[in-house]
Length: 193
Image (cartoon, rainbow, N blue to C red; front, side):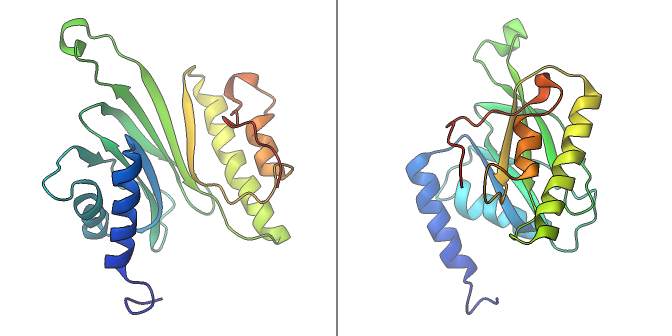
């Protein structure tokens, strides 16, 4: 792919249309260059377009030293803030682990807010056995980390999971982990292919 066959300007316009329609407060984007100029271009040309300045982004996380592509979290800074962020390294790509909080209008007075974690990822694509094993390995790294932090809370797993079926071992490791306190739930309860 190059600019002729994969126009950045066209992709930005398509994404701008989607963002303007759905008005998300949080969006995880995958396969973005780790170049800060590219990450910020998406922020400015899609989210903070046409005079808007409501959005910010998380830090670039690249613990695994990915050659070119990362995951990025964009969020509405008027409603949400970042308390902490770090990467969970795998053999393939990182999980971006971002602890966020709700910016209640009385936050300065009460100091009371709700915290939640956005876990953004891009699991290995492909339907061959090595690809399925790679996804499972990545999920195992995440679940091992989550099991070790012993932090109760609300966790949202987002990104490109690349599962072809809910029977895949990686998917099952997310929803049926031996520690019930860190199991993920499919919000649509739509198991299948």
